[in-house]
Image (cartoon, rainbow, N blue to C red; front, side, top):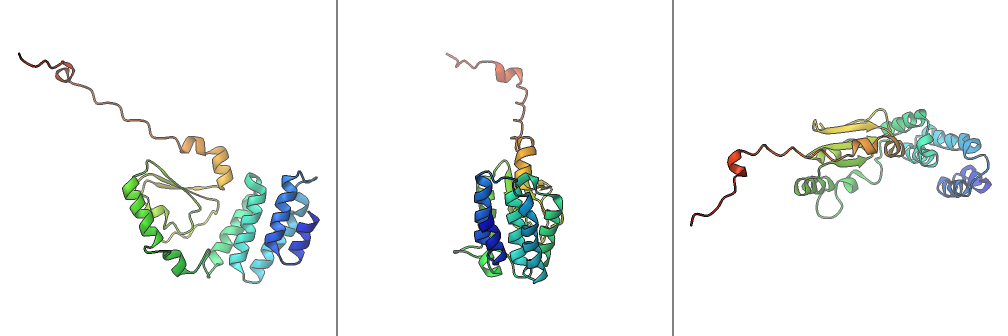
Length: 199
């Protein structure tokens, strides 16, 4: 744990997170609680320096370490960092739109029309563009209380405000049940009468 703290103080959050996670995996006495303020300070430092993309990563790191015990205010901070982030996340706008021969959302829409899934589950809704590709029932799970959707979702799409850990622990069993099969149509007496060829 001390090595993780040292990396945080040296402004190297990625190796710090790896050491903190390893310490938790090995049963760190006292757990993460005593070290949480330092992790939060690192996320807040990123915000103060205007590095919202890095702040998003740090708030996500905290949520990954705390799992379903992540306090609600952390998700509010994550939402604020997403809202303030002007440089995108996970690549430039061009990289997010195109990787290969076709824009990824076109491929996703094609997959939905071809596969016609009974239910589509998406973890992390962001602006809703991927979720809007669903042509049938869809659930988007995102812990951020305020999303800036840039598209209109179909009425069959639902957004669940929850972390993925909390969703799978508390809601998935009920929400991810397949639809009940349709009752067979009542058969007419003629349909029940066996047909015998005339001899």
